[in-house]
Amino acid sequence: MEPDRFSWLPEHVIDKILSYLPIREAAGTSVLSSKWNNQWYTLSRLVFDTDCVSNIAPSRDPSLFNNKFLQIVNHVLLLHYGPIIVFKMCNYNDKFTCVIPKTDIDRWIHHLIGRSIQKLVLDVWIEKDYKIPCRLFSCQSLRILKLLWCWLKPPTKFQGFKKLKSLELYRITISQHDFENLISGCNLLESLVLGNLDGVTQINIHAPNLKHLDIFDTFEDITFHKTFQLTTVYVNLSSYLNSKSNQSRLHGGSSNLLKFFDHRPHIENLSVHNYFLKYLAAGVVPVKLPTLCTDLDCLSICINFDDLKEISAALCLLRSSPNLQTLEISYLAAGVVPVKLPTLCTDLDCLSICINFDDLKEISAALCLLRSSPNLQTLEISARIDQHSVPLTPISDTYCWEETFFKPETPIQVLSVSIDNISGLQLELDFIRFLLLYSPVLEKMIVKPDVNVRPELVTGLIRFKRESRDAEVIYVQKEG
Image 1 (cartoon, rainbow, N blue to C red):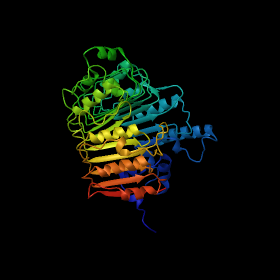
Image 2: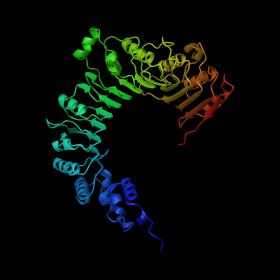
Image 3: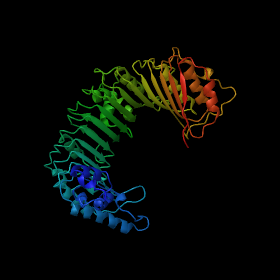
Image 4: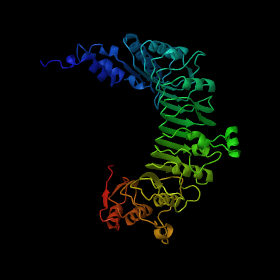
């Protein structure tokens, strides 16, 4: 009989193995070895979701499924001993939601507080927002906290989570005062994610160690206090609120752009989406920021080219980012598309862009960027189909690329091009031909067509004239 190899594994290795298994499979490992018998009782990482319940279809018997889910959680916590470092719970999937009594959640949270919990993820959907029990705010062992679909009302004496480094709040109800006290009380906070907060209209952040900020919400204003370490910022403002403060900036001498970037020169990655650029453009837009964003190397920005102030704000960011390496722009084709930007992107060497080749204005916008980026080396293009655009193909007999689009005044210096998801449209082929014809130092072009591509595409690629003798066109056929 072969020796039992499992029994000789150290306990911390066994615990690590079990931590990667669903809870029901971890419990089933008791039969593998005598040493593994009830080893899952000491698991430091507990994850409960709808996959915990097996052999019961929730659509057929939702009541039985609910009861089974509650039994599993209660049973595991009852038998468990030792610290619980990670606790995650999600009571729904895309087809079913478990009904969990609020008293049960209260009891589970009370159970966790005395177990040295460091990471708590509570994604529990209830018809009425679940109010987090006050006792949770006394848990000073927390380092990571992620809450969804609940109501936060910290006790009046709450002074923050002193060890918390990561906080994520989604669809949370919380007052303006409690929100500000929560953030300012977490002195070690490094990562903050906010989405759809009810009760908060002003995003006021006091977090001296904050490095990562992610906001997708609607707010009137955003203000920082002693928050100088930010390196990654993503803001998706879902709508623009014409608040009194923004109105005063529009008619006065202050500037949202200057206020936002004041003492924040260390941002490395910045995403400005939806209406956030409109917010930044409120008030006076400087030609260049007084303190350059020398660390900014990746900028993703959404521009409405019908709004001159948004264009000015975007150009201000470009002028203020001397070391920018990667630029992603969306909504390029709105408004008048210039042949070339008034200020060239001389430091841009990598561009990733999505183009609808049924839209001539989007193609014009992409070409504008190419003409305005004399030192571009890497170009990544993803073709997309927009159901709301007016198809321009098949193209009329009078169409001529050279008469529709201007050739570049100077050669395109790109070294590597990747084009994904094309289907063989005439405008796609003409765009590829344009790149091959005006890129004298091109080394490699990778073409990844759609699954249902026309065979003429390969023939067209082979026949195209290339300005660069070293240009290699690599055709990668998708499977399907």
